[in-house]
Image (cartoon, rainbow, N blue to C red; front, side, top):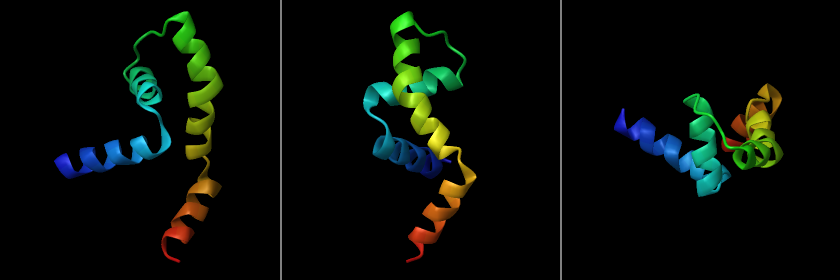
Length: 67
C-alpha cells in the first residue's frame, strides 16, 4: 500500500508541478476551486489529465517501456 502511494506520488511529480498536483488532488476529492484555480486547472492541468486518460497514448507508453 505504501509502495503504491509513493509510486503514484513519484509519477505525479514527473508530470505535474506541485501546484498542479495540489489542484489534481483537490479535484479528485471534490473540493471547490477558487475562480483562479478553476481557470488554471482548465488551462493547464485538465489538458494533461485528458492526455493521460487517452487509451492509445497509454498503449504507446506501455510499448516504449519494453524497448
